Amino acid sequence: MPKNKRSGTRSAANSISKPLEPLVLFVDESLDNRTVVEALRTTGADVEPLTAHFPKGTADETWLPYAGTQNWIVLTRDKRIRYRQLERIALTHANVRAFVFTGGNVTMKDTAAILARALPRMRRICAANAGPFIFHIGRTGKPIKMS
Picture 1 (cartoon, one colour):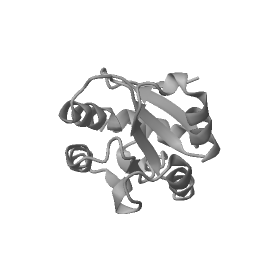
Picture 2: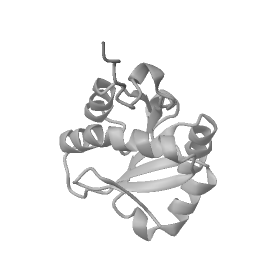
Picture 3: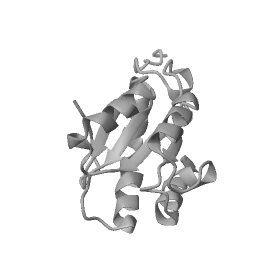
């Protein structure tokens, strides 16, 4: 009888890759909207809205370090962040991994759909990068590293 030939590929059960870390997404006031939060939770994401921890209007300098110490992934909506060096410095100084939606005039419903579709890419980026970092996500939903 012929011997069974092995394919040479590992099965999922024998894979040596580590499972992706559980990510907690922290949505700041600009995305703290039921439509966005529910769309992200529908994909299986753990979501912490800003208003669950701080009152509306809380300064970035207050919540950013907290999000950093919790190792949460910050999601924000600021199409002008590319031009605001102090905001980028604050995100980096807080040691957060941040994704900034820069899609412009897009409804919250469309923003929610774009971010939900981008979540698998965001997970892979977070698994590969300890941070701090800032990626922007436009209407295409493709995260691009900010320099």
